[in-house]
Structure formats: C-alpha cells, structure tokens
Image (tube, rainbow, N blue to C red; front, side, top):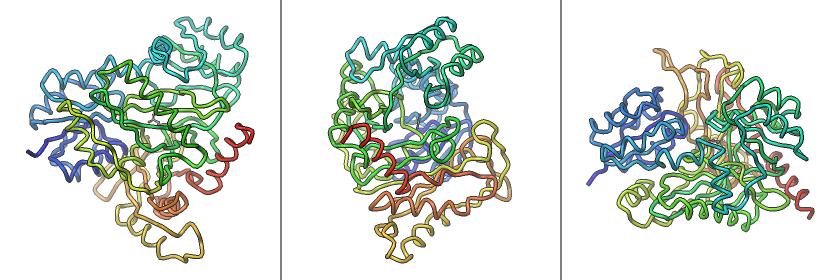
Length: 448
Ligand code: GLY
C-alpha cells in the first residue's frame, strides 16, 4: 500500500523532510508559507497556519492521510498531533503534554530532576521578575536566563558571553516574560544529537554542530541557526566516542521516563570540562540540523514512520559515511532588522554545478578531494513572476556533502558565492579554521 503522508511546516527543515519522503509515498504538505521546494515535491499543498490544529486535521482528512510528520515546535505546542490523532491520523511528533519538554523550559528542568536525567544545571524558575533579578545577582557565577515559553531560539541571554549580569536583568525587566528560568551557564562546545523515538525505541543520528550567532566568529545576536556541520562519522572532530555515548544515554533516560514519547527528540548538549551537560531539549528536528542528518540517512525515513505508527520496533538506522556543511543565506539585517525584497540568484542547478565545479578544480588542494553533491533547501522566500525574493526570515540553505568536512564546505561556499545582493551568509561555518578552534577549545578545557 502506498502511504499518504501529510507534512506540516514550510521551512528548510521541512524541505529536507519532504526530500527524504517524496519518492517513497504520496506526499502532501501544509504551512503558513509557500515553500517552492516543498510545493515541487508534494502532490498537494494547502496554506494553513501551523498552529491551526483543526484546519490541519481537516486537510489531513481531505487528502486521506495515513501518516503525518510535524516539523515546527509551534504546531506541537498548538496540539496538532493530538488533533490529528482525534481524527485517526498518526502523527510522528509528541503530543502536546510531551512536547512540554521543549515548549516549557521550567517543566524541562523539573522533569530532569524528578527523573534523574543526567546533565541538568543548577536552576530556579520564577514568575516574579524582581526575584529572578535577585537570583542573577546572588548566583556565584555566570547564568543563562530563559523565558519558559517558545521564542524561536532567540530568547536566551547568557552572562559572561552575550551580556553582563546588569544587561540580563534589564532584559528580564523589559521583556516582562510571564515565567523565566535562570540557570547555571555551561562553558564548552555545543553539539546536537537528534534521535527518532517511538514505541520505547531510541535511534540516534550523527552529532551536528549548529551556529546560533548571527556573525562570523560567533559574534552578534542569536538567530534560529545560521548553519551547521556534521562529520563522516557519528562524532564531531572535537568529540570523543564516549561524549556521543553520554549524550545518547541522556536521550535514553528521557524516553525511559516518558515511554509514550514519539517523534524526534533533540538534545542540545554542551561538552564541558566535566563532561556532557544538557543545554536544552527540543521535541522535533533541528533547523538547520535536519538538513545535515536526512541527506545522509540511508534507511528510508518512511520505514521509520510506518514502524512507529504500527507499534513495531524501529529499524536500525544506516548513515552514509559522508560529512555535511549547511549554510543559510539570510536577508541583510537578520535577525534584528531584516530587509526583505532582495532577489535570490541561487537555484538547484547552480548548487549542483557547484559540486561539479569544486570537484573539477585542482586536486592539489586537500579540501577539493572527496567532493559529493550540493543540495538546496528553501525556507522563507517570496515568489514573484520574475523569480524568488527574500522575506524577513532565513531564505534558503545550501548543503555541501563530501568525504570530509572541508570538501563539503567547499561545495557549500561555491554554491553560495552568487547568492545575490541583500543576502548574508556565515562564511566561517565548516571551515578548517573554525573546526580547529573548536578542537583547541575542547583540548584546553580538558587540560590535555
Ligand atoms: N538549531 C536550533 C533549533 O532548531 O532549535
């Protein structure tokens, strides 16, 4: 039987999900934005707000969906999985209560303590902003202040890194969030491990490093993520095998305490001098991390979804031994003052040719060896008669694949070299220099 899968969401992450499913099923999609990459892969597309659970469930009934995949956290928080289930459609994503692992940071930390999930920081939660400010003052060391609810990855302020303690307090007083979490700051290197979870099974995927800061050298405000890389194995160059295993143990301990959890469980970890700590959990694929992970997944993603729905053991996952580098092109001024309306000059053919061009170049440069392919994933773009234009969010991402991170980076960099005026890219993501800085940082921390 051919499955009919409904994909919810219209970002780069969802374009990567669509690419990994389209040839194996009848794919339909719905989102608040019309992503041309998804529309080209899907048999039908409906413009629906991702938080309108009833409208999404109506569309699932119309297309007779046999499965659904939920991309964005806003849909999880709105109870889209629950609404689909009420209509008899299995959705790969946690129900609203379990999605609190991401949607409620205070719940997340309490859950960790109550269930002995390793890697939890010292923390306190507050309704009273002045009490939170007093805690920031009295805490012996730097802190991270976080609104308890969703902020698109842009709400966290870290003292001793982005802000001073005075600025953190001013931020809390200005924003007047209803609830905040103030927690110990972790120092180290961040990495992400995502796992497919259902029926009590946990199937981890290779580690990825995202880059949240807007500008090169990890400067500037936090963004939804400017790009990310993964290696041709499951660890990153600054990690040891035991660090990856520690992260997977954490994800498994979450699922032991939440045995009905299903969907992607995303762990954002900090590799510190004292081992692996949990920065946060998300209840869905990362964006951009999905664009690193799904292109190297050799096990059909549809097989995971079907096994999850049918209450079967999840398949063991196979991954190509391929490194990936993903770079987002964003409008000038993103994220604080984005300027929409710039023409986008990159298309799929240009990205494919980037891989060919790089492969053809002189092989005396080590980074040119082992080049794979280049992939283009659209995110938030505006379609006009004469082409695509930027909106105010991340526009599109290019993923380079290769035998090494350097080879993958060369493809992504070439593809983006003519992205168009009015777009900005973090050129440093995946470069040998930046990766070496990460390795040196961890070496320093570990004192070896
Ligand atoms: N890459 C960060 C996130 O998806 O939240």
